[in-house]
Image (cartoon, rainbow, N blue to C red; front, side, top):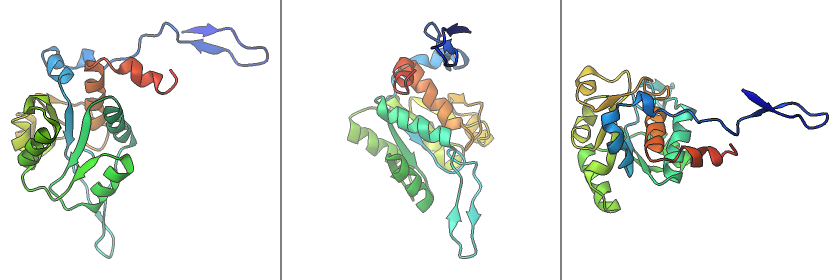
Length: 201
């Protein structure tokens, strides 16, 4: 690392003017790069994908779950850079609604047919299923996973799901798996420099 000259009385600053930003693409299968570059809609299951799959109940039966902040930022970055993120869960989850509202992204709960939901979203946005990425971890996600252009599962997905997707992340659900996919999509579409510039880099 090179360093910029210090301002009088100030700390020495690292010189990152010639830094090549890290990219997730070298670790992403080369034959999937074109598919990732084509994605316009990114759908995410909630339980086991945006969370670790565990459910917590208080004495009154109220449900709670934990979300990973890196995933949330990844979803917002997709939204900012032209990829529409959507949360789709089969559970009637108020927690998922709250998380989606906090992020300002579309959220669908109590969805009995996730493939039909994705197809309706495609019609709404005027795109084909080949322009959709879907991330899920268990059997309710199989139908959309088997029909979209980029099917992804977290590292801890059920084996029946893992064996049918295009790619499986290194991170587990609720621990950065969604962010891995977000980073790949942004990189495949040449958005890394714009993302970093948005944070002053």
